[in-house]
Image (cartoon, rainbow, N blue to C red):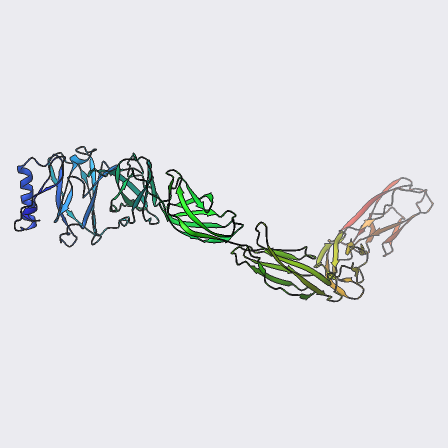
Length: 615
C-alpha cells in the first residue's frame, strides 16, 4: 500500500482515495499510519473494523484476489461483500463499517468469510460487533473445505414482475439467493428465504424466479452455495437484470427434429429463457402447450400434420415474449410400413420346445407392436416392447399336425400400417408314449389299523392307463377306478407285521410304468387271549355235568386253559388246541353252589371268567 493510496472511511459514505503519488513504505508501517489517521480524525464511524490479510505462508494476497462476505446476527438476511460501500480489500488490508448494515447492533454476533480466489485458502471470523469506534481483526488464511464458488449465474426478465436467475448446480449443494437495487452499492438481502435464517439451507435447484421486482428497476443478484455440512461458499459474481426490459426466450434446437404425419412423438426443445410458469410452442400452424423441464429445456408431443417442413418458435405465456424462429426446424414425413423380418416355415416333434424370435423395424422411428393370430394349444407369444417378440410352444403328444399362425408388426398409428407373415408350423408324431405312474413311495402301517392310499397315472397320449398290482397280502385290496386312479386298502391282522413289496403298474396295453412299493406293517404288541363265554352251569347229584371251554389269541398263539380249585370228583382237561373239557358227576352229598374260575393265558396276558355251577 502506498501513501498515495491512503483510505479514508467516512460514516455512511464510500471509500475515498487520494491520487497523490509518493514512494511505498512497508506494510506494517502503513498499518500504524492507517490507525493514526483513524484516531486523529472523525472519518471512521463507531463500529468500524479493519485488519491485515495474509496467506497461510504469510505472503500478501494481490488486489483482486480476496473476497469476503459479512453476516450479522447469525443470519444471512443481510450480507455485505468486499465491494460494498465502506468495505474493501487493498494491498493486504481489509476494512468494513458495521454502521453500513441496516441491522447492526453493538454486542450482536457477526461472521466474515474470507476467500482467496487465487489459492483457495479461506478463513471464518466470528465475533461480536464492537462498541468502540474501531476494531482490528487480522486474518490469516488457511486451507478450507468450503463448497466451490457458484458459477454460470445469469438472469433474464420474464415479465414486469418476474426475473429468472439460473446458475450451474452442483449435486448435493443448496443455494442462497441475494438481491439489491443496482443503483445501490450497499447490502444484499436474501430473497429465497426472506426470514433470513442461516438454518434454512436454501434451494436444491439451479433456478430461482424472483416475483418481487417492480418492472422498472434494475437489480443486482448473487448466489452463495451451502454443502451438506452447512459450509458456505464464496459468493458468485454479480449479475445485473433490468426488470423494465422483458427478455425474449431463445430457441436453439429441436430433438428429434422429424416425425411421421400421424404425430404422437415426444420431442425435446432446447434453448434458454423459458418461463417455468408456462410456455406455448408455435409448431407450424398449430399452437402446442409444452412441459417446462427447466428454463433451458422443454418437451412436447407432436400433433398430427401434413408432410413437409414447418417453422418453430416459443412464447413465454406470461410476458407473451416470443423467441427466434427455427425456420424449417421440424419435418413431418409420410408414414412408411414396418418391416417384419422373415420367419419361414417351422417343424418340431411332439414334446419338444419350439421357440421363435421375431423382429421388426420401422424407418419412421416408431417401435412396431408385435402380435399374432390365434395360437394353437398351449403356445404363447410375447411382445417384448422393443420391436421383438418371442413364440414358445411345447406341443403335447396329441398335437401332431399342421398349424398356420400369422405374425404381425404394426406401427400403431392412425391409420396404422401392418406387415405380416403366415408361418406354417408342422408338428411331427412322437409315437406311443409310456404312461406315467405318479410316485407312491414307501408306506407304513400298524397291525389292525386300516392302511389306505390312492394311486394315479397319466398318459401323454391322453389314454386312460390300466392300474394293477402284483399279488397282495391276505386281506389287502386294490381297486382300479377306471379313470387313471386306484385305491389300495388293507387292515392287517395281528399276525401280519413285517415288510411287503408290492408292484403297482400303469399300462396303456403296450407300454407300462411300474413302481415297487415297500409296505412296512408294525407289530401292535402282545394281545390278550379271549376266553369264549361259558356262562352259569347247573346239574343234579349223581348225573354227569359236562361242558366245553374254548379260547383264541389274535397273535396266533394257542392259549393255555386252566381253572381254579375244582370240587371233589370234577376234572378239567386242556386239549392243547385252545379247547378244554369240564366233567363232573357230583355225589349225593355235593348239592350246592360252586364258583370256579376258568382262565386262558398266553403266558403273559390272561382272560378269566368265574363260572357259577349249581348242583
